[in-house]
Length: 102
Image 1 (spheres, rainbow, N blue to C red):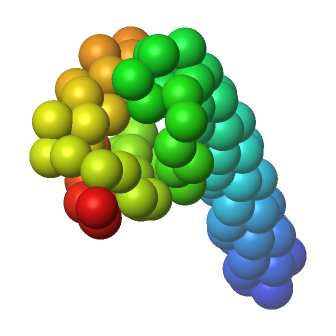
Image 2: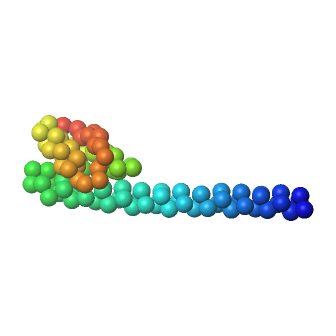
Image 3: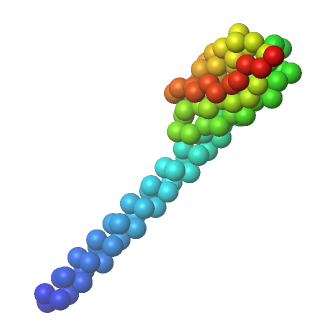
């Protein structure tokens, strides 16, 4: 009887661990999907701005934090890109790594 109870506890514990891992996997997929949506929304905002449309930017999003990189001609353009990214709903913060190059 003791062996049976011990074995059942082991099986139950293992099942709980597997269930927790599956739930965590779903959360990671949801975060990745949300990050992809944010990246697309930021890219769209940058492309729709006439001042920034001629420039190419790299946008990466990790857990709601947006990383911008690329090249522009003025500080104002860099600031505009950052401001546009911050306005996108769901963006938690923006790290602006855009380089001003004349």
